[in-house]
Image 1 (cartoon, rainbow, N blue to C red):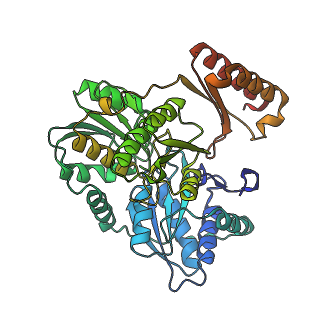
Image 2: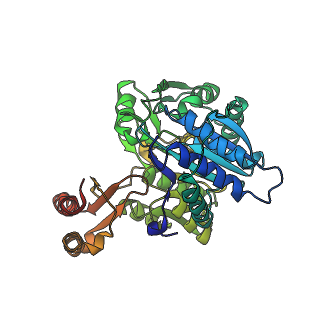
Image 3: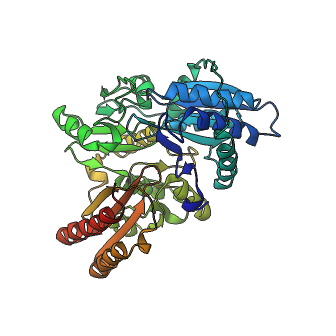
Length: 450
């Protein structure tokens, strides 16, 4: 489904300001109806719903559940859990579908609806497109019940998910390691205290007191510099930081340097290759991954393929190439032999297990990753017109590509979840990088800026 064909669904479900279209009560109710109707033919269908800690998440979950029940679907609630927990539990318990109420790394005012099939994978584009037609048709006329269903959270859901995480790293003991863990006042705060208490070692938890309005606020994977500074201040070896729904993870080493998704891919790829588990010696990254990662992987005899940004696109390329590892610079890492979707906590445990097994620090494991200077400029836009069809923008992009040639990259794209144009420039010359980024961003701002 092309971006232009989408009315509601972006790269990661439906997302917007809670209470406003497309997350107004009628559209949310209609989404529940459409999902329920898509399950026709499934005997006694059930759907699992999980949510993050946003103030709006409970009413959105209840409104969507009302639509599902009106369509004859049973609804179970996992309560506040990470997005990947819903994917895992949906598949484990053979539910017909799973729903997560979350806007991931977005501010608290936003929210979203992410949908999973019974297999634990995000719904195919074709099914989302078919659902869109019904949602749009029903939303204008939908009558939302005054009395919404009461969702009773199944507290055992968290325990089941934690048991799954522990099963992935059965022998992991963190004795001798000191960690700082930033839970972003999000879904990770419901899991991390129990999980890390069981793993031993010393750990300090940050941002584990969600108020409904402080998710991602100056913390978490969106602000990895925070945990990096805390690692140094507290004399720790490793920092872990998650986003609001805990499907991505970033790290920090003992010197306070951020270890992003590119560095995680490098560590994991080399380890899998050494153990004969890196199928075809291939890793799938995205257009945003640094050229330094590509060079480091090449030195280890590993080929890097690039997919468009978005874990859905990364997974699609991985399935085409039978790749055992893929991910994004932002910390979405996919281990298909372990899970069906990106899982921040799983990623953290895999890295911790690698550190413990190898006896090497994060610094040693990533020492030869020479990162090209890279800048990302976000421009808030009022509409998403094709950028190359805007003469002034196309001219600046062409000039940058010609100037940088083999010494850099230019990637311009719209965010799939926000009204933003992202200008990414990577170059050996920091001066050229900044100059071209500002020139392109300026042209976009002039033509499309709010």
